[in-house]
Image 1 (cartoon, rainbow, N blue to C red):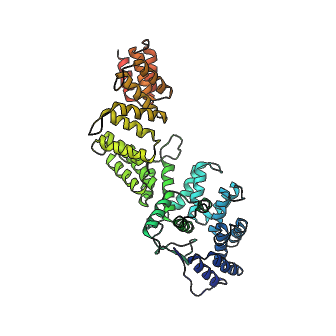
Image 2: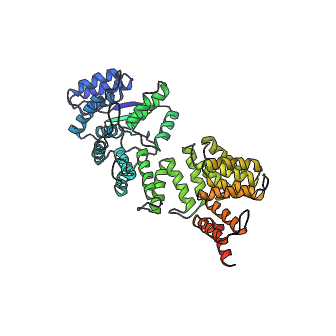
Image 3: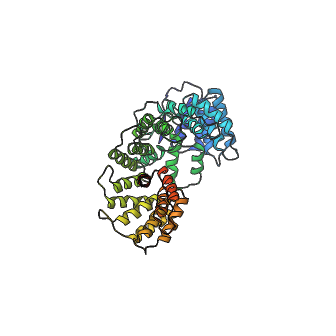
Length: 469
């Protein structure tokens, strides 16, 4: 990566030294670059002072970081030139805290607001996150939405942050040139930045702990890239945040299904993996669009192209398991559940559905009650109560184990106590039929009603059946 200084006639005092300092950065001679920026700063050159503050902040060209000097310089640039980049870095230092600097959230938010008001995208994105979470500031979803919209509505055709032109500090006289960066490194960075806002302070903490040349090269590119404005990844993140703000949940006063799918699709168009997964969920659950399982699985597969280690792996497995949007295929479902567990061996629901596949033994998938029981136990141990009900059911029918209604009853009690709708139903069934316990229709109805409230359809039909007796 190189920084191209596009002014050749050096109109302002210190511009020639600024140019020379940039050339030294391009040669990785940061100590020489420091000298040129120091010289240029004597002429009160805004961007020389900004570069100088950043080199002191990072420690590039120095034996160690000089954070006190960096803050002094950043405040100088912020105060005298209202520079949004200096304000953004100051905000990050005070919000995150840094070496010898305790977090001062009020001061950090102050700098974020100043930078955001000048249109610095990442400041508005960060401020929106603070408002939406109520982190160090009073929660205010309306203000969060306003911050996200400032970024989300930026029109940019480029889907990659590396598509030219890319202007350092948002200054059209300072262009980043990535033509010497290999495509695989660009792909790695592009994918990494599309789903997360990068904090300069956190990035420096990561960088200082590695001596691996490739790791350092990648992270240096990331560092300079994050100091560009109106990046496609920032736009995508803001659009995803808006989609999430409008998404249905019980405490959402701004719920709007149409806006959820609209902003999710916009973010997905920039290659934002969480947005692709959200679009898939919208099609699966009729959020702002008609239910369409084929579209859902298509968007889940798009997610996997962008983000290999994704919950979408499990969702695709479930769609194959139930035959939604695709032909039912338990063998293919099992492959996806195993793949999910390769990524995350604590994924309880994948263990549960693997158990279901082994219990059914359909579509060329192996049939094994023993393996089903093992999977159910793993899922239950990982706090998936429905798996406990499946274990109880195997004991109830004597499938792969000796029939034992006492053990089945124990499992149904366990799952009912965990407020599992299926567990309420099976425990109610035992009281209704008098299995292992004294018959008690009143208690059975209470449990069936709790199961019905939990969305268990069989409970609804059973309640109707009892009431008609």
